[in-house]
Length: 233
Image (cartoon, rainbow, N blue to C red):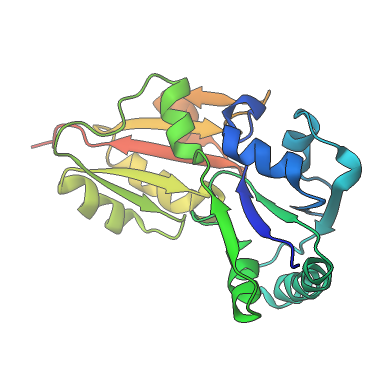
């Protein structure tokens, strides 16, 4: 009998934000695959705070580069390994920060496994921007407001168009567009800027201070929520 594969979303970082369903899947897994870089793994940090057997966790290193060739080779190798384990009846969990369906690179693995006739059951998690709104008491969208979520590839002009059209904007991966955010803020001070770093961790930060935000060099784990302000005459 074949084992099953679960894609387990861990939430943004705070262990208590993981769902009961996700925790159950982790506890029932024979092997838990956990992505990370050569120096750190936020997924592993979350797992270590949960009531699971860490001896079942297998950390795999994902090269961090815009060229995804090496990363995809790593994923392919892990998928081949997982296929062999599932054939022997092992239950596998693959972890992802936030929600696995929301800007998560492990979806490459899910697609690869599906092409090998090994479907993955995905378990939802709390995305970082939802947790960010909660920690700051921010009502992200109200009534009939429209929300746009962007992956960090954005220009100042595109932001201006969205906010002029009264969209609430969430920008993930701010480190990819630092200069454009600074350029936009310099001429659009009227908007409501909420900046976050390391949501769900001990290094969590939330700021609405315009001067602080516009001078920052945004790290990888940062995001911004911008609510449209009154347009200047």
